[in-house]
Amino acid sequence: MPSSPFPTTAPEADHLPAAPTRTRPLVSGERVHPHRHDDHQIVYAASGFLAVTTDAGTWFAPGTRALWVPAGTVHSHRAHGHLDMHTLGLPVHENPLGLSAPTVLTVGPLLRELILEYTRTPRHDRPPTPEVLRLRAVLVDQLRASPQRPVHLPAPTDPRLVAVCDLLRADPAYPGTLADLGARTHTGQRTLSRLFRSELGMTFPQWRTQLRLFHALRMLAEGAPVTAVAHRCGWASASAFIDVFRRAYGYTPGVHHRREATAARLPARGRGPLPPGPRGPVRGPDDG
Image (cartoon, rainbow, N blue to C red; front, top):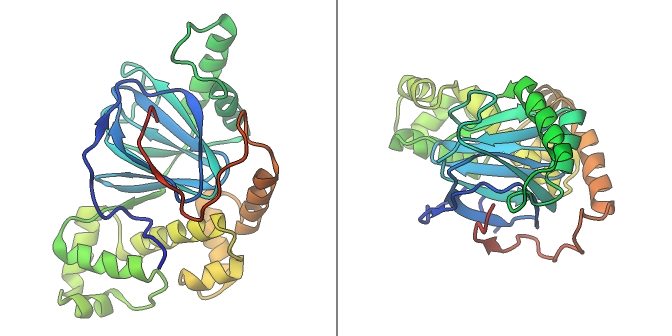
């Protein structure tokens, strides 16, 4: 049975004061333990996708998205697909977006190249050169202009809602209505509808779509065909899945597959071959 993409335990978080600026390789399925920084942090993966989890839920960021993690936020990472995790630390007084909660940001071609270049070399142990300062200034300007996207799967706390969400996590393709789920968990449909809105900030269909997109990204990163992903995640047809995916991420699942295949053929930046393993080890946060 494959391991769950959602954490089932909450180990004690490590405190790593400085959020590093660096590139760190992760194998598919590899996790980074919960930790927090005194700095803000941008987290980005150009291929595959990262799932970043906090107490409030899970944010998922494919190659056209990056995640803003505010200072002090306890978070953990999980890689889906072999990838390089690019992290960029910003001091707590520097918040170009004015954000106080984790937020997914759109990464256009220019911002992508700026992040890759800026994180190519670790930058927390040396004074910046004028060239690096100029690069950083342009990067921050691009961050400030980056649109925010709601690619977030909130985590419930009410036991009635937890029971419903757990059923859907176990079977994202489950076609039942909220009334069906209420009958299975002995909770009224109106109560569940109210809980989705008040606790998770979205409707039941919106939350289920986010869940299905999360699983779809995970399957695509593992190389599953688009049609199989569509049906296993609950869409009636591949075309319906493609339409929802394109509206969520700005490109089609087929383009996603081609990007992953291209990334797999390219040598990793500044490192040797990635170790094998379908799930990968669980690593400590080090300075990530």
